[in-house]
Amino acid sequence: MHWLFWVFSCVIFGIGYRLGYKLVSTKFSPLFNVAVITLVVSLLCFTLYFLRDYGKGDTPALTVKELWPLITIGVIMAGLEVSWMMLYKSGGPISISHTIPTSMVGIAMFTIGIFFFKEQLNMGQIIGFVLGLSGVSIMTYASRS
Figure 1 (spheres, one colour):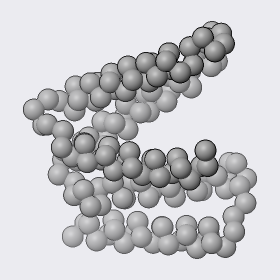
Figure 2 (cartoon, rainbow, N blue to C red; figure 1 turned 90 degrees about the vertical axis):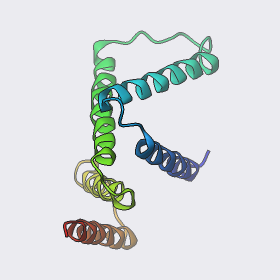
Figure 3 (cartoon, rainbow, N blue to C red; figure 1 turned 60 degrees about the vertical axis):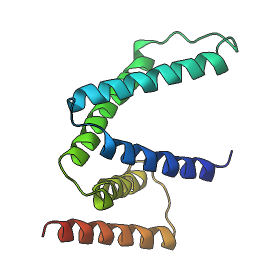
Figure 4 (cartoon, rainbow, N blue to C red; figure 1 turned 180 degrees about the vertical axis):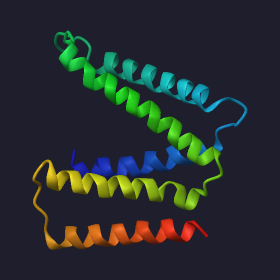
């Protein structure tokens, strides 16, 4: 599939994800909520793996070298999930609560791509970067008042 399919998939699921967090009950602690969400995601992914890929070859034996990035990403995802939940539960307005951190991540990834992965830019990408940086700056400044 074309990569743009996955961009739109991220957008659709991202909207549902953020709305879901805004609607999560405050009755339970954020860590409990994230634990339940993560359990559901893990069970679904393992089920899909076994339904789709099991038996199509040997299940790889994971070494420590291959396993540590997965554990690291898991720890990062836990921090991300708790951060998103706390952002919405602390009263952050849904209209900009998602936009500011997501734009900042985009700007950081843009910079990392240039300096660490030596990606080449065209003028449209440079203009987009400047506009994105300007937009985040304006939203952040305007949300302080």
